[in-house]
Every structure is written in structure tokens, then in C-alpha cells.
Length: 252
Image (cartoon, rainbow, N blue to C red; front, side):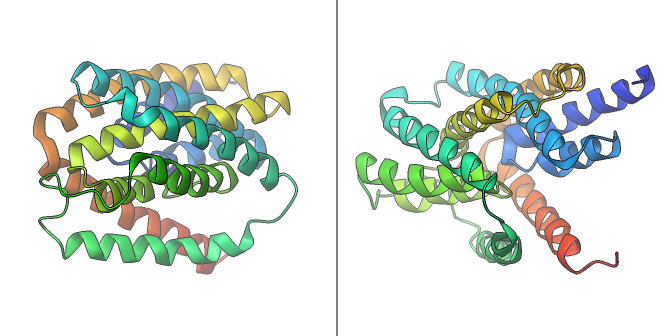
């Protein structure tokens, strides 16, 4: 593969890492870039998990250093998410995910509209509706499996769950989301590595970009807080909806 292609993939990783660290949805950039580079779809998904894992790791480190991650609160959710993400990734190799492809864009659109019409959402902490144990069991199993099985919009669903069910304000919800996203990424990556669906040279080029982008994105989110995250969040979700609907109904 040419140096020019690797450079473009590095830049794609940087951009994806920046967006992922703030609002998720970096796959909108990285997966098409990997397909453009000529990787088969399953190899592209495995390679994307490899590079996005490192970008998310950098974002988690940044949020943790800022004191936004409470490890005691997140550890049970991490454990359950890991188990169900492994199960979801294994399941997707056995069955079709065509139904989810049709449903998810409309779920994301509903969330985007709700956030757009609720300017106060996530600005301040609210009363939790579930205990940490109940939240870990519910969100960890459902969203962990979903991320392993399909994936688009996982960060959005996690952020909304943290805000609406745990009562977290948006910055802490984003930090929590990055930790569990890292967990499901690592679980899925484990399955992809075992099944030999990772292109390592390309992954390493994109990891370099992801590490830079993840650090920059998390720094911006911490510095500017909920209003900045909200703008990026809504923009990314609408972009994801358009992309998924185009994949369904666009002219072939």
C-alpha cells in the first residue's frame, strides 16, 4: 500500500478519533476510509475496531485524569458490557443484522430530535432512576450486545442512558460512555483478532491518528463542557442518520 494512502488513512483516524472522543460516530469517517482503501467489509470492521480502540483509550485516559470517571461506579457495567459485546460479535458472524439496519436510523433520529428540543438536557446532574447495579445489568447487556452485533449509534445510546437513567450531566455521561465504549471495542476486537480479520499495517497507521485525535477531542470536550458536546453530539447523530438512511434507500 502506498505512503499516500497510509497518510490519508492516518488523517481519517485523526478525524475519527477527534469526533469519537466528543460524541461518538467516528466510524462515519473511518469505516468508509477503510473500504475505500480496498479492504473487504469484515476486514474493514475488524481493522476499524483495532484503531478505534486505541483512540477511545486515549480519550478515557484524558477524562480519567480530569477526574470525570468514577471507577467504582463503572466497573460492574464494564464487566457486563464486555461479556455481552463478545456475545454480540460472535452472533453477528452467525446471523444477519438486516433488521437492525432498518430500525436504528429512526431510533437515532428520535434521539437527535429529542435532544434538539430539550436544550436543558444534561446541563446539570439529575436524580438517578436506576441503581448502579440495575443500570449495569440493563444497559451493559443490551448496549454491549448491540455494539458487538451492529454498532452504529452506540455512543449516542450510552450517553442518553447515562443522562436519563443515571442522572449524569453531559460531560460525565460522555466520560462514562467512553469507558464502556472502550470495553465493547476491546471485546469485539478480541473476536476479530481470533478470527484473523484485522489488517495490522493499516490499523497501525490509523492508530497514530486516533491517539492524536482522541486526545484533542477529549481535551476540547473537557474544556468547553456540555454546550460544546451537545452541538457536536447533535451534528454527528444527524450525520449518522443520513448515512444509514442513504445506505438503505440511496441509488445504487
